[in-house]
Image 1 (spheres, rainbow, N blue to C red):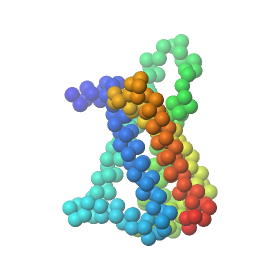
Image 2: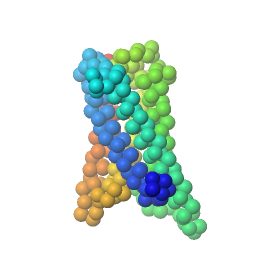
Image 3: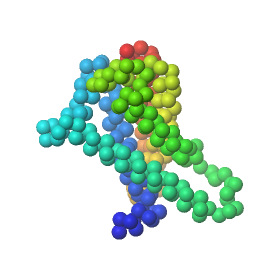
Image 4: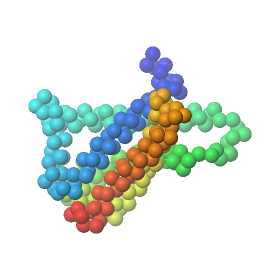
Length: 223
């Protein structure tokens, strides 16, 4: 039954919708937590420490963090695979006469595919930069996320990569949230306007919230 669900177009759309909402929920929490950086290194570093001990004493050190990582990684993979397979099905099902036509759609819809690719590449860079320190620009300090963040956004390329990715994220969320609502049956004629407004508002808040961190470093508010 699970295999039949996964193989169906409706099943893949539902998987995309659910995993998309999981990732949006994570983005909201992550954005709020990022705002702690404006309250100084002690509070931001304390948050970083809490991530590793959350669930204690019930959970062992970092078990809660790794549990969240597994859920997020699974969501990203399922979301990406579903999107790719649905895209391939759409291309195969498209009548030949429409191959060269340009359907009317929003800018966000047209850029969903490339936005997803940009975000996928960004996630890899972000992990290698601020989690493992592999590509970190300064002297990566384990357990000192405040200084690591300041180091990253003290470079022009760190700011460019992050801001471009956050703009892509905003466009992705704007279209993806509304699409998820339709796929999961929450939308209708009377609620569509509200969902679109909520999608726009959520995309703007997330984009501004995330970009405020590198802007804070560049302007010296965070240093």
